[in-house]
Length: 100
Image (cartoon, rainbow, N blue to C red; front, top):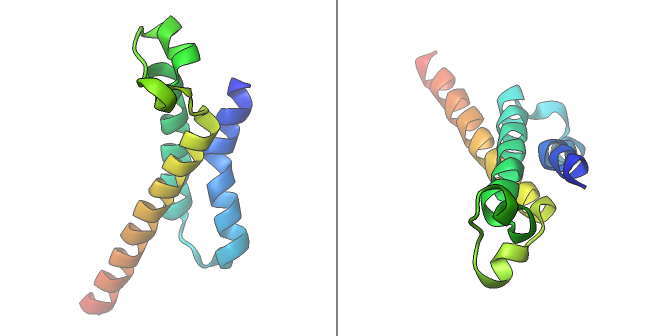
């Protein structure tokens, strides 16, 4: 259902990352991942996933891509948000070392 897809997109990647990397990750990394997963899920439902987007916006991705479930898309987008957040955290850590 839609609500579980939103929850999974927002929380699954940060939770798995917490299990894998421990508490050493910064807050921004989880925040970027959560925002990307939620926004990605909403956007996928609204503009890409043919069964729902054709009813709401009248547009969808063509062919097989339009039938990729939003859960898969939102978790992948959340992982991209995680990677961006991790890069931002690492850049900030390097800048802090340089400035000291």
